Length: 262
Image (cartoon, rainbow, N blue to C red; front, side, top):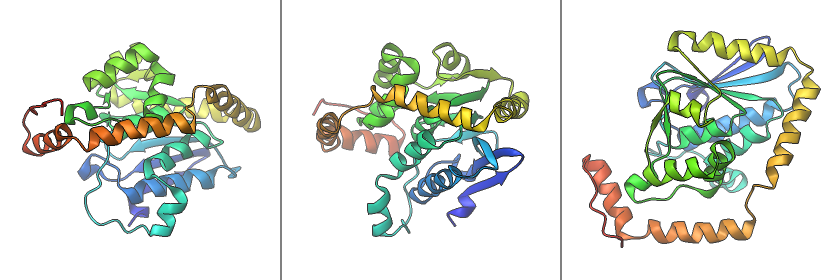
């Protein structure tokens, strides 16, 4: 079933990974995140692939975030080995030796925005909406994902996006650097693959080395293990509070939450 959730199609030097859950706006399950990470890891040494395009099936959503409902079929051993599924998927995008281009129709929100931010280049249709909104439910987003957004849009815009939980349109996303290109929806496919082809025609070793250099340059912006532990303690305190429970109930009941600061 996990394989059906992710279509893998290889063309001439370009591999397309398509999240295949259009009925759920391509929301992520644990199995899907591990599958995505596994495929990206396998592509590292595939000489026939020079560029990866990540997209969602259909034109309504790139990915609408997490969908953890239902039974988890992943073994405890695999989960222990790979760790947090979103961290595994995000990390596999970042460490993949091939450039990864996010092709964004519609919603790229929550964990979907996180995955798009982990990609090297983002091309969006003018229908796209992007953002991460846990504060709307009295919750806190994971530090590593937050750092990805800071690296792309800078501290000021990252703070505004995370403090408000606002979803922004494609044009504003481009203005703040969250996406590289915005095109009419009917032109998104052609634009994305023209860009992928342009990259694929360059020296593959040089492109991979260049991505590795960028990752090294960004390494100084990553948090230490001690800092991450301190941040997770802050998150756990918020997650166990009354406001978090109220936020979740309000979300389910589709009403505005009544936060008390407790």
